[in-house]
Amino acid sequence: MMTKSKLFLSLFMAGAIVGSANAQSLKDAKAAIEAEQYDKAKDMLQNLVTKKPKDGESYFYLGQIYLINEKVDSAATIFNQGVTNAPKEKLNQIGLGIVDLEKGNAAEAEQKFTAATSTLGKKDYLPLYYVGRAYIDAPKPDYAKAIDYLTQARAKNQKDPDILVALGDAYSGIPNEASQAYVNYRDALNINPNLVRAHVGQAVIQRRAQAYDVALENLTEKATEYPNFGPIYRELAETQLQFAKTFPDNSDEEKAKYEAEIKKAVDYYKKYLEVTGDKSVEANVRYADFLVWGQQYDELKSVALQLSNVPGVDAKVYRYLGLIAVNQDGDFEKGVEYFDKLFAEADTSRLIDLDYLFAGFANIQTGKQDKGIPYLKKALEKNPEVMPEIGSAGMLAFQQGNYEVAAAILSVPAQQQGTDYYYEANYVLGNANFRSGVAKKDAATAAAGADSANVAPVDTASYMPYFRNALKVFDIIIKSNDQKVYDEYLAGALYLTGYVNISLDNVNPETPELCKGLFVPAFTQLTQLLKDKQLQGKELTEAERGYLVDAYNYIGYFHVTKEDYKSALASFEETVKIAPDDEFAKAYIEYLKS
Image 1 (tube, one colour):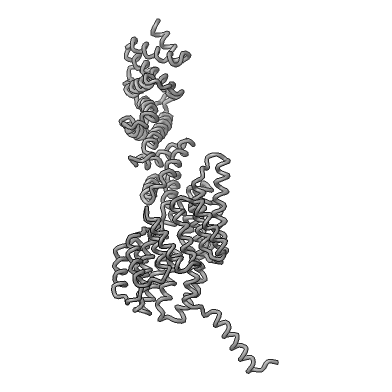
Image 2 (cartoon, rainbow, N blue to C red):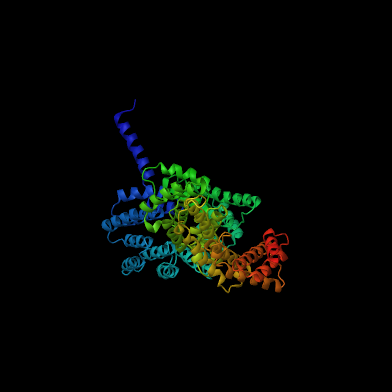
């Protein structure tokens, strides 16, 4: 039987063992951060802050964890606690400056950085290092300022390879400075050959040069050499994803290959989570962010549904649910609901181009154009590279016969003069407006009882704006001197302009005297354009031959209404040269010759 004294001794020893196991140092916490074991590092730092509240450095690194998890306000709270408890520690003042950078307040950040670094001791270099690091990692990086601060840090400490890695990262972000970046990574490895971050940095240079295969080969080699260093797998995932996005996905075969490459990226990210051992909600949020970037909505749905059940989870969960609703489920009403929640709960500085892009699509699809169009413009403002997605969505809506949706979406690229999409967007936009106008006119005519004995006035206000908008955008094409426009869009724009004017004119065989011939100028210009093409030795397309048939027939019809039979006959004879079996032209020729 164990005596009281032995029991006390055993409990004391057990406590000592547990205590020593839990008494991780700041060095351990920093190593965990380096390995991107953020949840582990967070636990260590919270423990250190509790046990040593006067140690200001621990607050700074704990605040860094919150910044990594995009909890900027929480980070600010931690940094302020650090300033209060350890006012002489400059790092927490730097932390507050980083918070300003994250919120887009660059001037306020610089003021805090200057104040924190102006009275440093001779060997006090870490504040300078972390300011440099902040400018590299900021939402809008300032690599020149980063290099300035890092150079000052380097002057104070020649032996810390992390400074050289940061300099490499800064130079890597500047066009045409890859060689200088490589030199810094090399010098860091000369100090510490096992500094994996430097090896990774060299691979990232290759990734930025779009040498994805070389970058992947080097990263894979380093993963074999350092299999327990999680960040390598994240870099592999991000590099593999960028590589996959270079693959076309038009045919079924191409899509299968594209998806196989994307799967490799997702598998690398899963390996990253496995190696870091981070199973926290925040880690899953970062994984969801990766899936958003890769547009892997099946996997995203699984992750997002788990996150949505976590109390107080990051508002970004509404981004995930909104993207799934729009892209996977086609539930645009739900998409609007989720994006509205995201915009209401998330800080504006945390919103990304995809939030505005898909909120725009969802609102337009549900008839809320006044909200949707400004969202699309905002997405384009944040990232001009979303233009192809906007254009493709507009074209798809047009092909599906959703002409009002197509017109709303395409109205955005149609305003971006000087871009590759400008004229094509205007052409399809005009066509979409024309078709919407025709549908509205037919509906208004039916509503007025035009087919009954009691004919009410037709509500022209319901369709006239569509026709006017169509003419406006077609006019942009017609007046252009661009050779590509001449070759690809001018004939179609003239043809459709003629047809819009037919809808605006009184083209009715029962009242020929009311026909104004609004369509004649466009059709006349069209016939001349296509004649010129033939004179240039160019073969007309089947569509262009159809354009000519309709143009000559309508011009001939107008001359008939004005009793200019000679001109009418000449026009119809032009028709039968192209389409000898055209019944409309043949009937009028027979009538006119009789």
